[in-house]
Structure formats: structure tokens, C-alpha cells
Length: 231
Image (cartoon, rainbow, N blue to C red):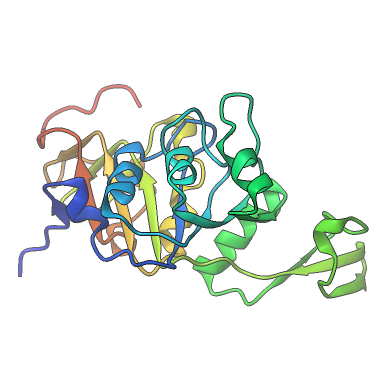
């Protein structure tokens, strides 16, 4: 059986994401955001989404576009407000979107826990603030801590630099951010890449996400082979 996880269109890549789904979206600011996949998700018409991401979008693209069109029911993120996007603030004031505000380190670890099968973990971050109200607290050697639970998604939309048809992934510098952990913490992982390389053209030492975690790969341009160039 030939393994080939590539798809021809972004629409095909996000097919199967249903209304009410929890979707993990990679990115830090605008670095590492799979804008093509998010646009395809918008075009698919799905709604009532719970979006887990570092922030709530910028300008009118990506997550901001989903907010603008009323497709998001809840945001789980660390930075919901930014100077370049007012869509979250507008929706939140209207009461059309819920917010679960999570400190950035805790958000990253909750996603990692979701992928690693960790049932929960204790941290000191947020203790004594509204962020941890109603959560289980315990006094441990480190002091008073709060129990945080893992985050998993029905789908993860992530951005990588290169893939092969088996779904092995490499990333470009800081664009790597949340993508590797999100890939492990989802029932379906979809990747947007700059290009798909021939099998064997990816140096195994540079592969960060093994293809076992990837379901679909969509490239903005035709497959290429040969040297990768600088990372």
C-alpha cells in the first residue's frame, strides 16, 4: 500500500471538520499560522467552533475572519486582544463569543498533556486570580498549586515548512511554535506547507513531527525535490 497523505486543495484538507468542533490552530502572532487552511475552514461554512490558539487573530485574516463571520463560539487563548485586530473585542462585548483565558505556558503544557496522555498537572501560575477560580487547588512542595487539565482537539490546523508524502514535517525557526504539540493532541491533524519534497529529501535529523501524527498535507505549490536550502 502506497502511503500518500497529500491533498490537492485546502478545501479537501479541512473536509470533515463539523459544526461544534474544537480546532487547534498553530501560530504565534502571525508566525506559523496556516492562513490557507483557516480560510478554507471559513469557506466550508462550519460554525459554533471552539478555537484553541495563542491569540485571537490579526487584521481581517485567519482567526479574525472566523470571528468576523460569527463562526466561533468560544476562544481558548492567551492573548485575545491586539492592536491590529478588534474583532474579538467586538464579539466579546456583544456576547457572541466566550473566552477561556489561559496563561501562555499553561496553554502550551495543556496541549502537550493532551498529546502525551497526561490526565492533569499542577502549576502555581494563576493561583489567587480569577483565572483559577473554581479549579482544584493543592498545597505541594512548590507551594499552593492549581490543577490544569489537558486540551485536545477534533482537528488541528498547523503550518510547517516542508513535508514528504508520508507526512513527516520540518519547520522554519519560530514558525514552529505550537505546531508540534498540536499535531499530537488532535483526532485529525492537517498541515499547510510551503512544499512537499520527495521521499528521502528530508534529513531525518531535521524532522520534528513524524508522519504518524499527520493525516493530511496541503501544499501551496507543486512538489519539489533537491536541496532544502537554509532552515
